[in-house]
Image 1: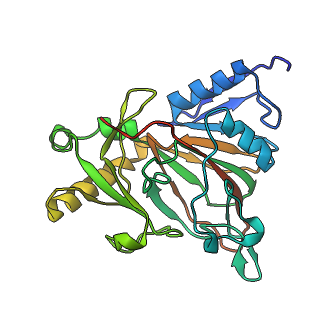
Image 2 (image 1 turned 30 degrees about the vertical axis):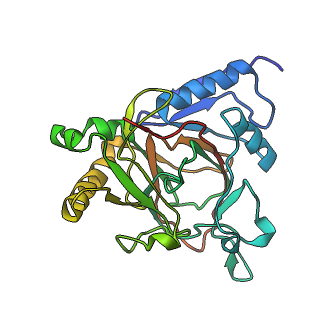
Length: 285
């Protein structure tokens, strides 16, 4: 494999870095992989523009970072023509009146992928095939910064605290405070999580999935969560990714949240999602 010139350009926002000079449709050498991983760990969100990636290319790229994640969504929520154990389409394109992918329309609340599982996936990747001319942006929020911004009283109160995370598949805007636990996947994780690679502490709650701080009085739990949710999405902590066809984006679920802005329903949007498993248990900060 030939040596390539790699450029690393931070977004200038709270997170996000664009790495140029990489053709991810071909196998990558150790130097390139190390550069990508270092940039990702430092900036939380890795962007490769102008790529031409099929599903196997995207899986190979994910495989440089860890084991490709299993797709846990119920089969009845997938178009059988596009079902896969590892690939999920995020799309509003419809066949016979039904979306070919998941999460087809509208905005989506702040969340961290698979936080309702015992071992949430370490990273999520999206590859853009078709994007609308306006909207459909993905917002990313730096949760190291959110933790550092917590008032001292909250850091003290939340030391060792755990929170319940639950999710009903397909939900983009949560309309109720709590689900019936026996009907949805759910798991308890620390409110403040220690990153196993960087050693830094990040907030690990989110408005789409986190329902309560375990063991706290209900009113206090709700008041604290509302305060945390407001801090997490402060504009100074956010990078906005405006999609172009051929974008590959990978983010660290251990220390970032993401959300989606609305877009015209008559405009097509198609992204391919593949995740990466986390070999480490979730650590309390």
